Length: 77
Image: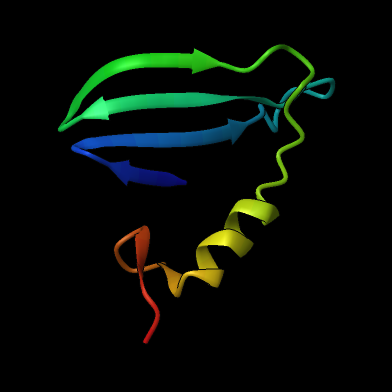
């Protein structure tokens, strides 16, 4: 999920290795200016749940919908 503010993009991410039986969620935030990564902030081990439903609900509450065609958030039709 990405948020834009004052020329920067903040990418919030979470993932895990589906092929590893004991895999744990990992996550963090990438801070971008254009295509250049300015910083990467990693979450503490064991702190990521992988549930982004609160963020998805917040985007929907301001009229944004996920586009499966362009893989980004857009104004809802």
